[in-house]
Image (cartoon, rainbow, N blue to C red; front, side, top):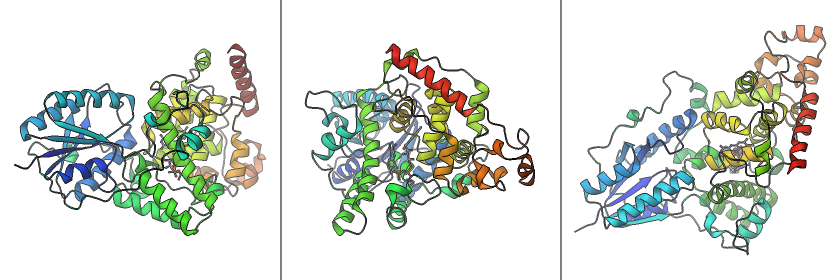
Length: 475
Ligand SMILES: Cc1cc2nc3c(=O)[nH]c(=O)nc-3n(C[C@H](O)[C@H](O)[C@H](O)COP(=O)(O)OP(=O)(O)OC[C@H]3O[C@@H](n4cnc5c(N)ncnc54)[C@H](O)[C@@H]3O)c2cc1C
């Protein structure tokens, strides 16, 4: 009698380079499932990520010719029920690395094994799994460069990607629900610009990667700092949802290196950014309190300001600092923000407004289509200075000079802050310095149609330096 296998999709919403899926299909007929987990102990998705998830599942459903079974509930109960009802012999999934997922997977694996079901998990989303990379004394790395250079690059190269299953004999379960029953889409239509900006799903992830190789990879190392340039890949949501794997990206880049078609330093730099993603997962795996607790304990003594008015001005892009406001509005409108601008707005929140990095991480979590527990937590702690290998406390981004340097013709800022579109470049990043006549000619009335700066940049900088320095002295 043929055995029936179950494959559980999670953050691997693709058919190609999917080791768990391939293994399941090699055994014969397979039941493909996705569970929208309602377990309150799991970190639930933010609104923008739910939007992405809907469209990504829709694309996957089409790839599976309607045979992707969808459920809502607690994963353990649902898997237990399917295994019993459909007499499943083998259960496969690809590993997730968020602490609550790891805990849940252990429980489910134990339970299934007790029932005599064959269970196997695979690595589909990291080039180097965190448990395999340790220092010679057996402890985890805490600094990126030795982690990446010694712990990763000097060890086993990432495995090559594998093919899609050639024969997908998938069965439909009568208890599967409709994707629309998950209610992932917004009830009020705030997603207009998201629809124009993104195309979730495996085919588009691969398309975006190839477009980036054609138009963005050359000059990546320099160009990635300028939000208006085409030198970033925008692959982060596709990678988060597993519509493309880091193995597919890595090996294609290695191929390009061998062909000498691009500058090696651009390729190396792009690979090292993928390395930062690996490092974020690594930190989350070895230090599971990363999303909630300061990595450096001395930051526990820091007295964050509880200023709701400032927090809301930051969230809405109404701080009076044009580059900060442009970034926050890009986030709100598209679910994405360029990395350079993420660092600027993060530094502004934590260092000029002295607001706890966790408030920033929560807002990003809700608004980003690429919201990722590992990268978001590690990056916010990096910006705050409280993280592993973080920016030093005295590194405070100046939103005026950052704007001038990285948006030199102002087109990014003018696009997202159209109130300022007629302001001469000289004043764009500090409108309050413009003479009254120029403001008037540009149609700007500060405090009326564009805010006055909510804090003084140099006074707030001095305040932050003193506050962070006292922390250092107390350490
Ligand atoms: C405050 C803050 C919060 C962030 N939150 C997230 C998040 O929730 N999810 C997320 O994926 N990234 C996050 N990042 C990291 C980074 O900003 C994004 O990964 C990057 O901007 C995505 O754009 P891209 O795909 O065009 O990047 P590219 O420059 O094209 O880079 C390629 C890939 O490398 C990875 N990568 C690049 N930079 C980083 C980085 N610094 N840390 C980790 N991985 C990186 C991403 O997977 C990215 O898709 C955050 C950064 C900051 C400063």
